[in-house]
Structures are given as C-alpha cells and as structure tokens.
Length: 421
Image (cartoon, rainbow, N blue to C red; front, top):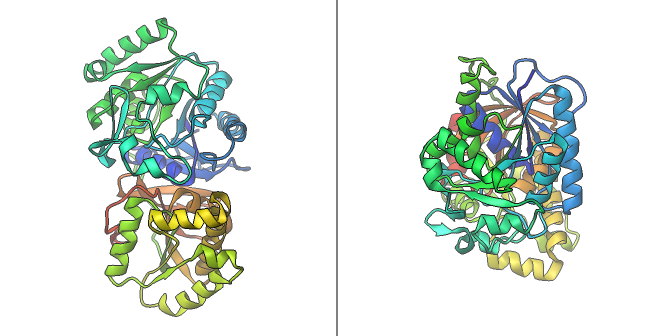
C-alpha cells in the first residue's frame, strides 16, 4: 500500500516530482488523473498528474479534491500538492485555492509552501524566490505567456490567493536544522499562520525540511521538498530500504522529440539539437489557423528519417514571435492549436514505430499523453534534475521523458538517449 499520495498541477511537474521521489529511494508510479483498477503492489508513492495549473480556480479545486479522495481510497496517509518551482500562478490562484481545499478536506490546520529546487537554480531567501542569480520578477518568467510572474515575494503572492494567514519560516531557523524548524513552525501556528513559506537555499535545507515536516498530513511545494522525504520515512519505518526504485524495462523503438515549450531553456535545447544535426520540422501556428494540414505534413517529413536517428518536431519560438501570433489569434486559441497539432504528430510518430519519445513543455506533455492514451507510468532513472525517463504501465509499451520547459541543459535533446536502459 503506497504511503504518499501526490497531486501535481501539470504533467511535467508530476514527472519532476516522481523523479525526485525515486531519487530519494521511493518506488513511484505516476498516473494521468485518478484511475480505475489496481496499481502495482510494490510502490511507496503515487503521483497523480492533473492539468490544472492554468484552468479556472474552481475547476482546479474540484479536480484536486477528486484526486485527493482517490488517493485516500488507495490507503495513502501522507499527501503532497506539487506546483512549479517558479510558483506559476495568478493572483486568483491556483496554488492558494487548491491548498485551502486540501487542508480543509484533510482537517489539517497547517502546511508549508516551498518551491525551492536549488539544483535547478530555484532558491527561496527571506521569502523571495530567485531563479539563478536574479529575482523571479526579473527572470524570463516575468513575460510568461500564461502565468507572468512579476512579484518575487512569495508571502505576498500567496496571501493574495488565500483566506488563510500566510507567514515566513526564514533561513536562520531553517539553517538550525529539523528541531529548530519545528520550533519555529509551532511559533508561527501560535500566531495564527496556516501556510508558511519556507526558505531554502541548498539541499541541506530541503533534507532538514523533510525530517521536520514528514509527519504533516499535507505538504505543498515544488519537487525539491521531496528530497528529504525518503530518508525521513525510512527513519520512521514507513517504507522499506534497499529497493531499486529506478529500475525500468529495456527500451526499444525509434526515437523522436516533440517540443511545444517556448522557455529560454527549451529554445536553447532546440537550437543545440538542430546544430548537432537532428532533423527539425517547425510547426507554424498561423498555418494551423489557416486550416493547413501541418501535422500530416510533419509526419510525411518524419517517417523516412526515423530509421537514421531521432527527429525533432517543434513549435518552440522566440518571445516576439509568440506574442505576434497571440496578437493575431489570441492566447488560448494559439495554444490550443499548437497542442492539438503536436499531440497528433506524437500519435502518428508512435504509429510509425517510435518507442522512445521526449516531450518538452507541460501543456504539450499533457496533450501528448492524452492523445497516446497513456494512463500510468513507472518512474525510472533521472536524465537531468527534475526529468526522469518513464515507462508506460498500461497499453502500448513506450519510454517517455516529459520535460518541463525550464529544465535540462543545452544538450538535453541530444544526450538523453544515453540514460535509457
């Protein structure tokens, strides 16, 4: 029976968290929404992937409460609400409203919020989120097309989204270790704080946080908070030790990359792949809007190339180009057109024999796994921080890497194949 039940607000975020849990030694399965039927018995954690980051807050709450009810029905006793390490949201939600609802359903008076992931350059200090060396509000997230983040003060951001009192558990207490963290958390609760932003500037902070908060019914954060949960659960005798958590079946089939993300990191990865000689096909949203059969054209282009090596089909573009398209088509329509086209491409590539597939972008990953009918994944070895290889559990056997747009180094699309079993 799985101990930990997790709810992630997008597909790549779910895979990010699942990979972190596997790295911490927890045998983990990721599902695409709640499932009917049994899961494997040899698991410690279940991560439910939703597509709730940018939908209306009331819909995100309903989906998250449904996932919580399903996880409780599986017997899970600890719960985790996972969102992006850049705290992607708006002043109306969805992080605050979902956290509120989960706390209420669990009857819990207190939780934390910490998006820190130092290995990927996300740190929180004095309640302010940094991306690398700059504040969130000065990073590329400032101009994100769906969730522009113009305020780096997480206490202020979250307080605008929740009726609960938000406080700060700052670095001096965190640096003091688990006992000091628990002491400060108790003091905050005595002051009426129900959600505490927790500072974290290094992995030692995350490990101490895991030990300090492992007994809370609900944790919320990016994937970094999971780093300390495996050791904390094993120390309490809640999960077994010594299991090969990242073992996957051998991969096979042709290789392909589908990229819809327009983040700085993914733009660099597309450029590096093209420069390395990976054949590329660019999807133009304006051609899609004009009714042209771009997905079919991409598949005709790709099929004869697949025997030679991986191919790349991408809608990744520079911010100016994205803004120009959105100005003509609208943000929602342009995004929907691209997602639908890339999902059709991915489905056609699998039908053409692709068995190893990388997908870049949270929204794109959600569209692709839905198009492929993927409902559950076993999580395997890490490719880069926050991005593991996975293997489908039900239906057609596939090896999938679902990559958040912000994650991975420049050579990610070129080097990831070497990490497959």
